[in-house]
Amino acid sequence: MLKEYLDHIEFAYPRVLYLLLLIPILAGWYISYSGKTRGAMKVSSLRSFRNTNSFKSKLRHIPFVLRMLALAGIITALARPQTHNDERNVEGEGIDIVLCIDVSGSMLAQDFHPNRLEAAKRVAGEFVQQRPTDRIGLVIFAGESFTQCPVTSDHAVLEQQIMQIDGGFLVDGTAIGSGLATSADRLKNSESKSKVIILLTDGENNGGLIDPVTAKEIAKSLGIKVYTIGIGSDGYATTPVPGPDGRVSMQQEKVNIDETLLKQIADETDGKYFRAKGDQNLSDIYGEIDQLEKTKINITTNRRYTERFHPLVLIAIGFLFIEMLLRLTVFRQFP
Image (cartoon, rainbow, N blue to C red; front, top):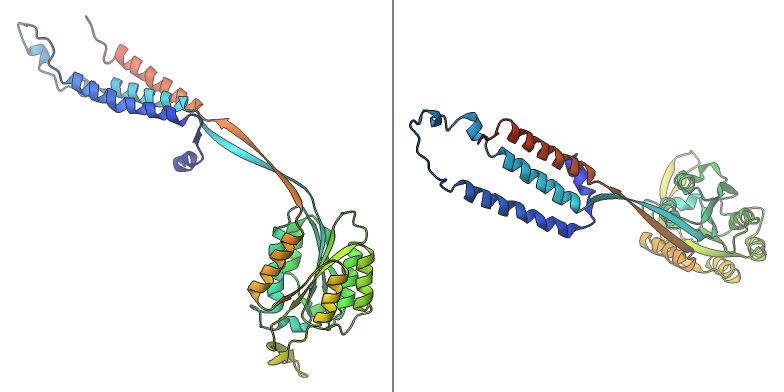
């Protein structure tokens, strides 16, 4: 407990602590003075001095020790020990963002660790943590789209929803248009000066009620910037494929990403297209988007100090009181 207390202590005037060097100097002087031979006097009998090793004689240095402890306490108190508490106020003009993530069956391909979907969830969560002043929502899509989390400033809830992403309850397929249109709808009533969609997919549009070009025009008309990410390695990737009997087998599936479409969506909405071929590459892409869409954040830190010298003063006074009491009673000297 004492160690934890000392770890949080700071001194307003730390140079005052150099005065503690006086204590060993005074102790040396005291030892030297105590060892000197005192003046002698003649007495008729030594009977009164036979008890020189009495209990009182052994404890005769206690008053000096108490005085030195009191001095140490006073010097330490003069250095003003303090603790502080920092209060941070974060203010800024945030951006409204929707993360639009493909959760189709092909996102379980294992060319990312442990698969594309889990890698996408991980970097999306990290991205959210870097955007403290933004309102962010989450839309997932496969053969249809679904709003997993509305645009919100409650990032704890959002991160929980990201971790709970599972495409098993959606019709399989890749409805890029539906995912983009749903994301744009979530930002339709946004009053933010900057609105962004980050759309991540590993395939080609093959379903949904809205085609990607129409969805792109909707986003464009609403002033929404769309960043598109094609996720998947080159060539083939090991992918779990369910069979007619319900059993899942691992097969080599060709990676087919409609990069032309994704580039078109990004270019015509003033966004940018990225291709993620590995875990680190995907993290770097989200990091680049984070830099491209910087928000103005003002962080004000208020530091409040609490003085902790009072206990030291009370302890020093206590030592001086005990010393005075001992000198007036046990060690009282009579003329």
